Image 1 (cartoon, rainbow, N blue to C red):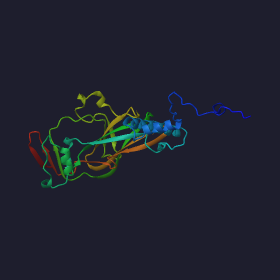
Image 2: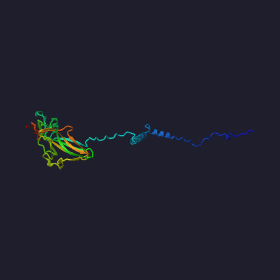
Image 3: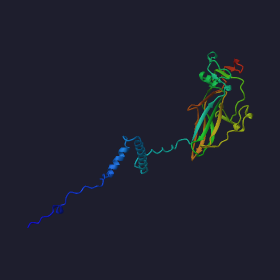
Image 4: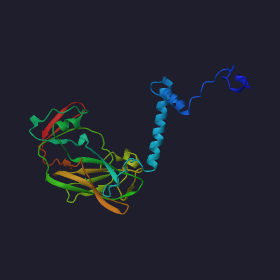
Length: 292
């Protein structure tokens, strides 16, 4: 006897269609990262490009700082060690000459360039005429430390490098000037060695402030914040002299002597003992030349 069975009961049929809406599969994490990178890439929108640039700069700076901190990148080279022979101070020099002291120029008088007016630029004229400062030359120099360490200036000397007879030529100057300025030290270059005289040199000093009439009295102490200015006047009658100033110093167990000169050259001044003709220009415009 054959048993018949319902096929629907023994064999599973096809699944029934669901009535709920199908859900889209979620993108993987790597897909989301790639999408973010595409948005921040230069091809993305302007805001993304700006943010990417800022982010890259910050990351680079942080990485560089970390590598430098751990010594994995070479940093700036260390500053060179201080030169043990370098001076612990600086010296600024200014050379002056008062027009009323005049200049000596080479003869003859007919070839001397036309002189300026009394109030004209005599210094420029002297350069063009190759004139040598006559009688006195003024050397101002300022000494200042390079750091806060004190430097003691212990002494000052004037040294004549070369002596020649006073120039023979034409002396010329504007006449009728006012009183001279204050003086600190005068060096008589006619003496060997030069004799220094401290204090006021000429008339007019009484009207000057007290701090401008101080004598030079060593020692002096200077540093970066405390400088000293000196005035030395080379004076001569008979000599065409090349001269310099020497200053002794001490600092941090070191001692030495610095030479003050005119940018590597000695100062030069001539006396007027050899002058054959002297010419004066006066405030009223009158000029006078006479033989000695």
